[in-house]
Structures are given as C-alpha cells and as structure tokens.
Image (cartoon, rainbow, N blue to C red; front, side, top):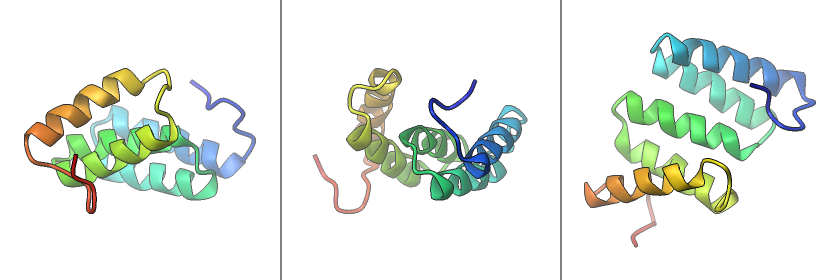
Length: 102
C-alpha cells in the first residue's frame, strides 16, 4: 500500500520499514520508523500506525495520545470509525492523553 500523494522518499522509506517490522511483531522498532516518517512528512496515517504500535507494545497511554491526534487530523478518514472505537475502549479503561479528558 502506498501513501496517497507521498512524494517524499524519506517518509515512504520509513513507512515501508515500519510496515516490515510491524508485520514481524517488532512493534517498538516499527514505531520508531513511523515516527521518522511522520517527522519527514506529517501525514495523519503515520499517527494511526504509531498508535497501533504503541497499543501492541502495551503502551496504552501513548496509543491513546496518537489515536486522538489522528482523529483531530482525520475525523472522517477511512480508518476513523475503527480508531474512534479503540479510543472509546481506551478511555473506558482510563487511558487519556495528557491534557485531554472527555
């Protein structure tokens, strides 16, 4: 899968490596690659991937933070309904990003 409109080689490279490590369940390493990609080109989809990595690595507070940032930038994106559900579940468990309390 290719990021829509991704012309920056650094962000695409980071995305590919992030997906590679994510598929091998090395979530911390994938997380780092997605952070690099987001730094190169702040596309909201990187926030979704960073949230997924943090979630799977067991860092639910960070996952909640990334998911909320994603939803602020893509409230009606193609993955937003799924992310809204994850955020709702995390909030019921008491995980809120700093400064954000519903």
